Length: 289
Image (tube, rainbow, N blue to C red; front, side, top):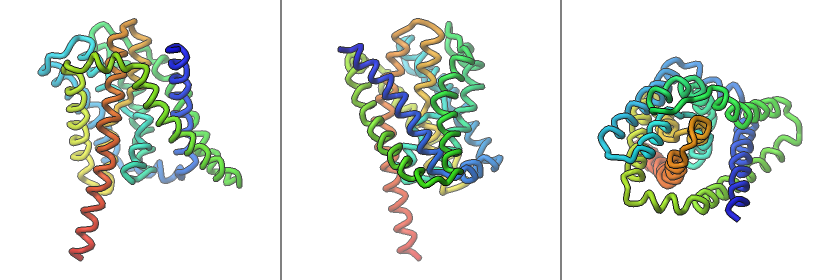
């Protein structure tokens, strides 16, 4: 039974990522996605927050908090992986700039392709990152569907809008199913992490990263929320690929699964809270005017 559920989970991940990327490509004008990347300050701050501050914070936490070796390796590995495919979904929950979320996701995903093979062997003892093993699934499951979505949108065919509606429904349904399957399949692993420092450390890590991203986006108030979410949402699928390709250590993979669940518990409410806070601020500004 568990093997059947595992295969279903693997397919659900595939369907979710592909449908989400396809939806993002079809729903966003390519020019709107490229526009934020033409601003050097946006690019520099996003890269600094995700590939300087995030790994450095992971190192500090693993030195300060007495984590088990596998848990520490998991946190360090996650610290190198940015550009999560869940970012557009978080942006939708926070009612944030969808085009900017896709732009940041593409930028950080590309950065991870270059950064992880260099940083992982240095940060995580005994772990090597095969660049091809990292690049292949990201290209197949994220870049190609996203490019296909942009191409379909440019065609302006009459059937694009119905296809977009279907892709959105599939993406949302797959996301919910993925949450259920990940918890069901790894319930024992999640329970075993209770009582250790792993769950609390990773939750703290995400919240600190959100704060760093919020500060990095201070130059543009309209993008502060998406900067915070982009920095806090780590690319756990990419981290799982590296962990599986580098060494046969199920303990590290289990840590990444726990991190995925903690990410959902922390970031989904955070996205909604940020939306509510922004609405409250804007309401106050309207009253003051």
